[in-house]
Image (tube, rainbow, N blue to C red):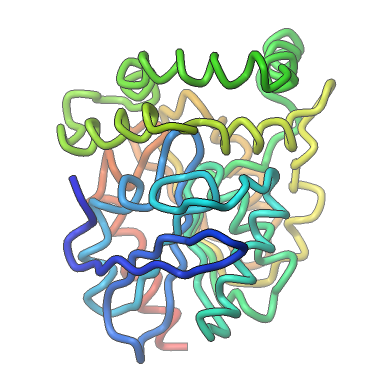
Length: 291
């Protein structure tokens, strides 16, 4: 699959390793910081379908978080606060003062934490089926099972992550509404990411940091009302992974939030329904530019 159309690949050396960046648009345009999801995602997968449109009038920069995609030699840092701090460090190194943060799923959790940690640097948020907005994963039984899975020692977690890589395509097709509509090259890239040495470990670290014994450690609903940045939340009505009720609650609590629900769509809105996603996001971005 390679990198998205309109993107150039760069590498930033940090902490003894390197971070992959995909950059597009013009350097004098406002920066859209694109944060991919968890599982075996990366920036090229998450943003391939919408990157060219975003690059027409903006400056999208998609970053592979530690342990994902083309970033290498950096120990996975764990939870969403730590990942947000990592992104702040990257922005400092790039000389970028302010961004509009885009985040999908786990990336939405990271974007929310970025806005909480550095509100002066986040001028807006676009959240796609964001994590971090629920007190528990499903029923008590389901949550306990998830906690037990996340609590496995590395001696068991690492082989299980490699085993799960064999079933990645089936798992991917289970999170979307219409698997047959997914671009074949994107599915292939998702499978390659899962089978990459170390693939899935960074997401395991995130789960270890966020899933508590009786509830989610990263539940931000009690504090999202303090985020003043204009926010657009986009969520698929048929999302089987992240309950849309978290997005609905956040939109009600946040002082400058707007919620758009996409019909006939699962967890991966920007990939499953890119035209509808862009129809929601581009006018919203235009309004931000008009001030």
